[in-house]
Image (cartoon, rainbow, N blue to C red; front, side):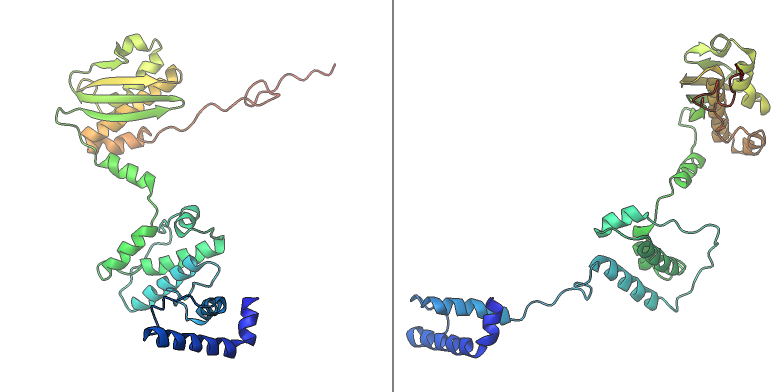
Amino acid sequence: MLKSFLRRNTYNIQTKFLNTLFLRSVFTGSTTGFKLPLPPEFSQIEDAIEVFKPSEQPASISYFTAKPHYNDLLIYLDELFEKYRNAPKLKRDKNSPTLWILKDHLSSQLGLKLKSTQYRNITRKLNRLDIVVPETAPKLHDFLELFRRIDLEKKKKELEANKTPNRYGVSYAVGKRKEAAAQVWIVEGDGKVFINSVPVADYFSLLKDRETVLYPLNLVDSLNKYNVWAKVKGGGTSGQAGAIAHGITKNLIIHEPSLKPALRKAKLVTRDIRSVERKKPGLAKARKRYTWVKR
């Protein structure tokens, strides 16, 4: 309502406002600091004039779009691409693409919900920038690090590859099999093996379980070279034996990395992911059915 009034009476308002400034100059000698109260219509006119004052210019050209942060990011990535268009590029392997931050995490950082097409637009532009040689554009790659996803499996393998025995010559590793998990320590010694503070011969009553535990040591002829301590829990006897053997294998690689090819050939390095298949409703076991009776 006020805006329609201003459109119809712009000339009158400006005239009254100028009269107000004239009155102030008469009483005070300036257009500011007038102490005497003015009629109510003059204060309303001054408030109305504020509408016509120029507002601040938005900081971004995407300010009035639906998703300004998303559009600003695209514009900035395009500017970086133009800046490094003539920079030397790398040849990347298509079988090992760069892992970028997931869509949900990127959406939370931008403060909006990205669609799949919008996420693909961002990653496509990031891939174009990622092939620039890092030595020629270190600041660019520092910026791209904000969008990289941490590969946990790769980090885990790097940490395991860099493991070394401590200052006492003791190495530590965790082995797993089925539902069992074992913490295993190895140090050079005379071949003693203790499981949960009990000798291996007393802990495992079955011969096949004892053979499973000692198989990695027998394979590389190190049965009387190392002492083994293990804490194991969960699962049954076969699962616990497999978990301890897995832990011993990882410790042997820490002490002697040259043994890894032989241990890998025996399929001891990688955890055995096989487990018992669950029972199904209506069946006797995982696959076994009850005997069908006609009557």
